[in-house]
Image (cartoon, rainbow, N blue to C red; front, top):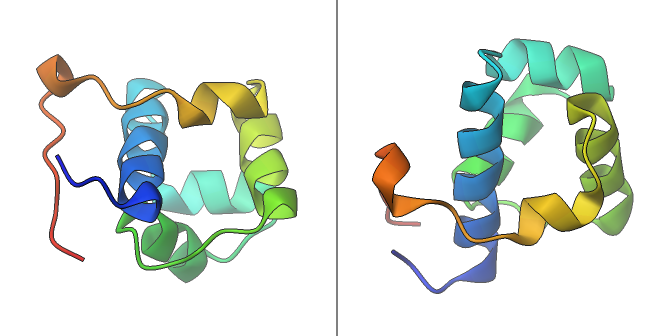
Length: 82
């Protein structure tokens, strides 16, 4: 797994989103963010702002701190190059 914080955050976001059965489009709609932005965050290509972390956490019904727990490698989420 990458040690890049943006990549780790993106993998965790993707893991949580998928566990809820949501598409990127749904997460974007629920959070008020653009789908392309959500995709960029999940790929570790965006250095996400705190306000947007809070928007995503709120949409997912979670505390923002949950998004900072490292992804679970047993869930089959692999690291991706950035």
